[in-house]
Structures are given as C-alpha cells and as structure tokens.
Image (cartoon, rainbow, N blue to C red):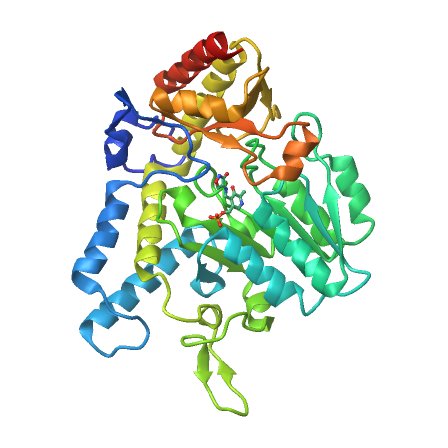
Length: 416
Ligand code: 7TS
C-alpha cells in the first residue's frame, strides 16, 4: 500500500503497484489482457475492499444497533466507523450528516421526496442542467408533476460546459432548488461549483450536488463547497455496489420528515403517533447494507492513502494522452472539449454506430461503454443517439489507451 504523499509533495503514483491492488485487472478477455476503460459506469475493487467485506461475513456478521451480543457490537462499530471515515472523506461537519443509502439515485430521490416535496408548489422552480444523468433529472420531473412546480434547464455550450449566461438568467427566476452534477458522466466536464453554488445560494436556492462522478477523482469538501446536499455512490469509487451516501446539512436533515418507514428509523411506535429516530438513522429504515457500508469505508480509506491529489494528477496525464491519440483517429470526433474535465473521453465516429464499436473493442479485450449514458437530453443536444465513452481510473495505462486508438483505427478500416 502506498502512503499518501506529504502535503505539497507530488511523488507520482506507482501504477504497477496500484494495479496489483486490483485482482480483476489480472485477466485476459478474448485472449487479450483486459483494458478496463469503463470506470464511469463502475470502477474495479481493490483487494482490501473485497477483504473487508469477506472479513465482515466470516467473523462479525450480525444485525446492527439492536443486538446486545458481541458480534452485533462489532458489526455496529464497523458500520458506524465506516460512516465516520466517509464523513471525514468529504469533510462533513459530523458523521450524523451522512446517510447510508443504495447510491446516488436513491439519495437524490430522498431529497426530492423528503426535503422538496413538502415545500414546493405551483409557481416554484426547480433548476437543473442539460448535462445531468437521468437520476438527477427524473426525480425532479416527478416532483414537478406532483407539486405543480416548474422544471427549468440550464443549457450547455458546444464544448459541453454550462452556459453561465443562461444560468445567470435562470437565477433571476429565483429557483427553489438547483440540482447539478459535480462531474458529467457522459462528457467528463467538471462544473465550476465554486462559482455556481454561491450564486444559487444568493437567490435562496437549496443546492443539491450529484457527486457520483466526482468522489473517485477529486477532493470533495462539502463545507468549502457550501452546498446543501451532496450525493455519491460507492461503486464508482472502488467500493461495492448497492451502497452510497447522502450528505445533508444537519439542520436540513433534522427538519425533513422520514421518507421510508420501518425498523431502525423510529424511537417509539404507537398506533396514535410514532416518534422518529435521530439523524441519520431516521432515513435508514430496515436492515441496511452493512457489508456494503464497511466496504465503502475501506474504499474511501484506500483513496485517501493513495492521495486524491496523486490520483487526480495521474488521471490528468491519462486524459491528456487519450485526448491526443484519439483525436488522431480518422473520422473521430470528441464530444466534451472543455478545459476542466475528469478522465472521460466521449466520441462518435463517422458512419459507425457506437454499439458496433463496443463489440469490436470487446474482441480486443477493451471494455468501454456505448450508449446514451443515461443522459438522453445531452445526447439530443449534440444531435447524436449515442456515443462511445472511454473512462479512465488511476490504474489505467497509456498503453491501454494506445490499444484503444489502434483498435478504433482498424475498426474504421473494416466498417466505414
Ligand atoms: N449521477 C451520475 C453523474 C452518474 O454518472 C451516475 C451513474 C448516477 C448519478 C447514478 O448512480 P447510481 O450509483 O445510483 O446508479 N452513471 C453511470 C454511467 O455513466 N454508466 O453507468 C452508470
């Protein structure tokens, strides 16, 4: 295990050592070494995350917060310890501001239902952007249908960045909610939250950030950002599937009614009136994904030990390389060309359908994603039905990117 570089130090990551942390990378697919370039869909899991889950089931498995026996105490400590670690990971004020949920999708639905629905009505506005993932569009659309509020959308420019003039114009309508992605999954654009959030807060909006694509790549400090809610998913940051978090300001979470009822989320249940548990447990009805939370805590510790700055530096290098070599492939057009991007390259190739490319690349052992990336309005904005997307993590190599470019050049010769 590499230890995080000292403050200000920029000793580069040892990529070969990092790759050895990920058992899944040591395989061939269709006779070729696996080149896993689909990290925006889900990232791979380091051995220590797999082992933390394994350890829990082998030694500590018990239900939490209720048992009086040793295993239950251990399971509860491990689960709450994971929460503490994740709270530190995003610099939350307190671990009670961090709710364990299934992931970003469930987190945004929770905010829409428990925070926004009781407050909004006809005449209110919900502002989102054209670049959002469906999970930061559809919950707001449902909310607007239920409350009579109006959904407004900030467009993106030809380079895939938010149109800041249009954003300013929308703020004059004083939206009640501004829901925005930190990093676009489809294009890789990093939104300028340090500008957007204070502006939206100044007109009284509640700011909800979809951080699904940010936590694996950038340092996230929810207090410095100044947003109201921040959602993220474990599986995109080297943790397990089916677990993620909603961070919310304590005063908001305290003021919100529960969303789902059941065990865990109550203090007292009587037929005439029940009393809700304290936050964050008020929002964790039923037996949670205990092993998932423990695995996610371990994933955050892994990222912290590698050093998020060193991860970001490595990914910047991969992005620069991928942008250069893919731009040289004949007939290839990159969509999303802004100056601030995570290591995602989305592209189309003249006369070749992304799904055909995906199949050809799989024969080369290269895993990418082809499709609309759950961002159909964004595809429509760029006049395409789908793109091919290579999304990198710090364990990827320039050789893998070169293999991708070579395979695309050959595909073009065969198909176009
Ligand atoms: N928000 C963004 C920006 C995402 O990229 C995704 C998943 C989600 C929300 C939903 O996260 P979940 O963990 O609740 O499913 N994005 C992708 C993708 O780009 N390819 O597959 C899933």
